[in-house]
Image (cartoon, rainbow, N blue to C red):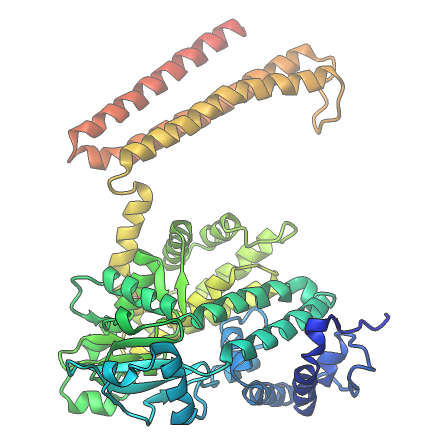
Length: 557
């Protein structure tokens, strides 16, 4: 195979120094073997031959060096590592475990540098807006740092300030990562995992995190979703002082949720806090479809009344209604130990390759479920189940969206916090009421039952209208001697039987659907008399189909 040169357009030439820094860092940490597979042009950068890790100890050592390399390369690569830690389908478990140790905590910028950013964003009236700002940061991360301050009215606030030039630094890195991902697409690993799509999704996430307007809107959306819920507190955003690079919000005074000793000393019920934390994330995922995707201990504080204050809304996940329904069905089938039902849902999610060994997948899924059979729900650990499921994903080349893996990582992290607070926590018992509620809505969406019925009726009317025509076309193809799996050329009797059988099959499906519609509507009809109208229509439809089938059978005798 000929070597592939690195792209060298004018915009790329200015990146050469950063390219070399990235490559030399990975080579220094023992990843020359991986870079060699990209077929980079040797004249661009000499890559020494390296051997792939052979033993488990080699793999663990490489995982440590991978984390160290990412930390050395700075903000963009730390974020890459954090995203990769949510993708056990892409990397070995040793790497995933090591990447979870990545902390987005770096040395803060000097106050002079940060003050200059504030002047640039807020203006010369900075001291009038914030008469008091603590120059020592409360926290410092790769994209920005947080300082406590006060408004003119004396209110305590925190100011999140973006690092200077961080956006341009990240764009250079994203450009280089895009180039390397394009080269990786040509490798066997790349053909399976599509690294360009991974980097594109990562770039989208990272650019969103750089927009503090967006983070503020996320906070407002969370606050709206938890309106009336006294267990969760979302700080106020001060929009009049917020810009794209400066976020101003209410300061929370509480205990870090992972500081068990302080929570105990304050006399706060840890079981209640654990329950609130887990029920919060389950509600966000299954009910709202909008969840906090970075639930580490530093982003949650226990307030004096036992409620949970939430911070940092830069990384969020979103789920469609269909996503939430799929998760609910997976949950229900898993609790029921129904391997076939889980596999059916994976097919519905388009997660299964066309050539999959379905029997093997169902058998291995059954074996996985049996591992947890008889185990009390409170002793089941979501993180363990996810690890076992990941093995099946790898073995059968299943393709699940990045959102699914981010969701899994989020639930696992929140479960870990909950268990730290209360070791007997039962995450499944906490989620059951929300799952039950969503299941009811899946059967018949609340306040939308009539629209749902009309839409389904129209769909089945379309099926009933098209199936006879499709059947006639099938007969025409038979008459014209066009290739079919079933050859009935010149056999008029058999052709009639096929047409008759297909018509009966199509209307049998229609009858079954109408019966199902009645079953779904009947519970609601008991409390709403108007619902008997569509039920009556279904009954009339069934009777009409029976009459048609009887007449059709009589004519075909």
